[in-house]
Length: 386
Image 1: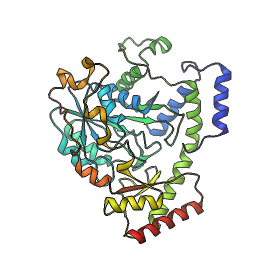
Image 2: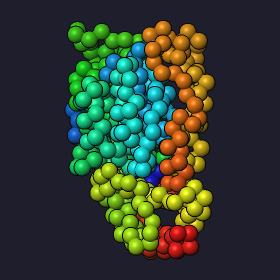
Image 3: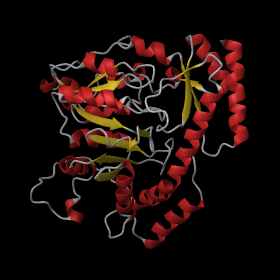
Image 4: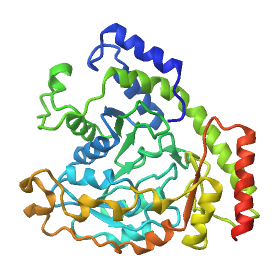
């Protein structure tokens, strides 16, 4: 959570005092945010959801991903990415990341099999994937792309907002993100049919409030609606976002320039001037040096967060993809040809990179003196360890 203040308090109070907490009413806060976020990300449609996880799952379902399909996911992401694939009834196939700490296009190409139908490139820690290469692979093999933008809110790739280059995108607005309402998320797409199906995953009963569409038969789905309180907060947060991203990008470029003569190897950037700038990262010569560098600079080793590496995805390794044995995608007859076996060393190349990669956080409220102090720690650590 970067900035929350009196404006959010006032927006919440206005909603509460109005008595209009349910999202379906004229001039509602959720509807307003959806229109604004669609414009901001450069897409036609946006639907708020209860979380980033429901946003990813809704995007997949909107694209009609389901049993019999494999979806490629990176070895470094929050488990929700893989869990969302299972929620759609499909099977996640884990592939390596490269030195950008995001999914490797070469690994994607190598991993594509007869059942592969989609790719989820995950823009991690404000860093963006190599979308030119990924979209070219997708076109070549006729695969769908769902951008997981949950940790890259406000980020862009070569001038285009993340979430707008794939067939659909998913965002998270939980406590740890660049914009937050505590929890929450959004699905974005420019395809009307995808948007309609994705919207049904969020609220299969929306026709009660918005009217029936004779050309669309709604399907049963769990509810994932956002409330007007969340919409109100997000409208204020969106006002704050551009300035925060600009500040963090500026900090990152300053830090990288100041460290250029230290011998440190920056983490590979796929679109440096357009990513969020929330973290500056370096790839150290060894895991041992990385651990010491992280401790000295206030950063963290990307393999050691406790939740962002595939080896920590217990339900995946246990093949427990549903609450009931007969609703477990790993046992579906349609998924028998899908790759369903995982080993802890299956992405050893990723583990080697992640154990050497260190990220150091930026903050939009850091002053010039804060950035200079950070640069001093980085340079000192580099001098002592390299």
